[in-house]
Image (cartoon, rainbow, N blue to C red; front, top):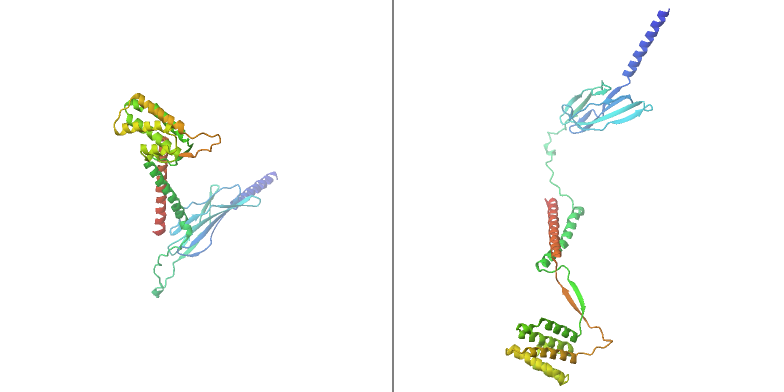
Length: 362
């Protein structure tokens, strides 16, 4: 009795193991479908391979290169899509292949193998019929030749970049030409204007006489240069002080004009100065040292005796504008670098414009 019970228990265990193995074997299903059984040459079809299995299992799909079978090409292998079922106990993985063919025939698509936990499962086989384009050879007049090349419609968007570069190139080119002219003429890019108050006539004359005294030209054997500078200073003073152009008048004309405006004592010393100067300049007279000093003193006395009296509320003298055009080596180097950069920018701009024109018209 006891041995019989043991045999029944063993039999029941074996049956349970067989049922579990059978259930496990049936837990994986592989199915292949095609969305169109018939296509024209060059058209596309979609092959769908689905695998249903437990969530803990691992599947390996077949790997194809360029063709599914000879004559059927794979255009694209879509990324697999995974769906979980039965509270994430099961999952359904879908793999799609987009195929086409360029030869008319009936193609046999063999079963597609899928490896699940080192065991190979296969789908059912598929078929694909590829038809060629029907051609009516009995009516050749219905065939049309090549279409002529159509011109693209005009669009302003195609010209925006070209126009922008053209408008940019014009001021750059103008600036480059300006800089080249400035560096060629050795002139700065921007002139610095220095505004200085204009000195009264007697102060300007005394400043010039002090310079002549400091240089002592007469001691260097140059009496002509000395008297020329001294008389030019007096002539300029007379022009600014009395208002007539003494620079264009002879010595006698200046004296006569002054006699009509001032006392004779102030003019007498000036007359002696002009006479000595004329002798030195035109008769090669060589005056003595004390004579040169005396004439310098005569010029100073004339200025002091005829200068305009300074008033407390005297109006401000007009200003002198001096243009400074000196350029340092550093500025010159920066100018050359700017010219080089502008030249490179212009060359690049012109190359871009040329390429754009070539693409638009060729």
